[in-house]
Length: 318
Ligand code: NAD
Image 1 (cartoon, rainbow, N blue to C red):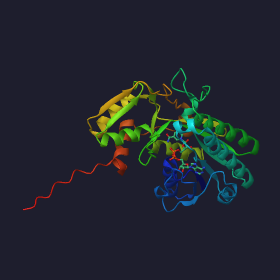
Image 2: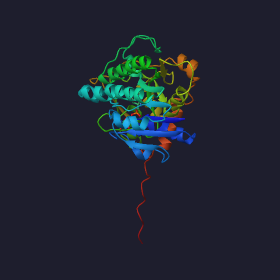
Image 3: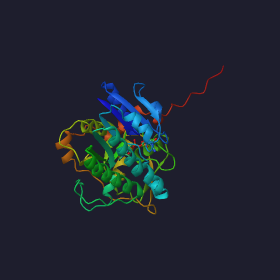
Image 4: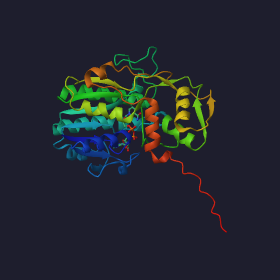
């Protein structure tokens, strides 16, 4: 098949692109490299640097494409609080530009990578797709608005769509900006450097951490699975893990003696998050393969940024 992946040079996009070319598919990648790294891509991916709002570029890239994976986005929740207009322009505006270009060229299917963040704080866990969204940040609002656009104009224009609400994905190669690092690579880095882990609040908040290869398996299934047009489908591990338990697992995986600080004054954000996977199982045949302990081990082993060189011995000079 012929695919276009937006955000192809990012953490999830590059893993997906490399998997698809290994399977013999034709893959074009678009990314403005605002955070992405083209070095992460196999040379077999036809890469173009560009903005997802650049419609002439999209028209060219979409020729002969069977399915689009739309991942290009600004993804940092704290940053979105500071720059909501920018998040709206890229995450919502970029999605509408892409859908218009797909309509113009006649592309039939889009897989949109949305986020579990659209649920926000909810009473009951695990979260079913039928829960009423309660976005708590401009990032979450932008992903929810993009979902509505994809499904609504997809229906109006005859473009099949499916939205995957990915929970907290992690794995080797995840972008690690110093100003707002995602929790798992940040904890692994601190642990390997013998540093201190800081938990927001008291560390009781929970998240659903899903290993990148499990996420990729759902994206692959979503490009061809029948009977999923218009659906929103959760993608997680189905396991709820508190930050305290994550810290313990990071300690066990790295073997590091950790100093842990709590910061009760900082907000822990959404208090609980766990995906109900019934729909993903039924529609995508999804079964998560990696436990958090396995995923942390693989992340540590496969990401050179977490490797600590053994101290060099002083040279004995006679
Ligand atoms: P990422 O930042 O590594 O990837 C996003 C990519 O989009 C980057 O390579 C960036 O350069 C590119 N990009 C940003 N603005 C662009 C623009 N205007 N035009 C073209 N490219 C642009 O993040 P990721 O974790 O790989 O996330 C990929 C997608 O998955 C995003 O849509 C994100 O919202 C979604 N998602 C990620 C997670 C997660 O835990 N990683 C969870 C839920 C949803």
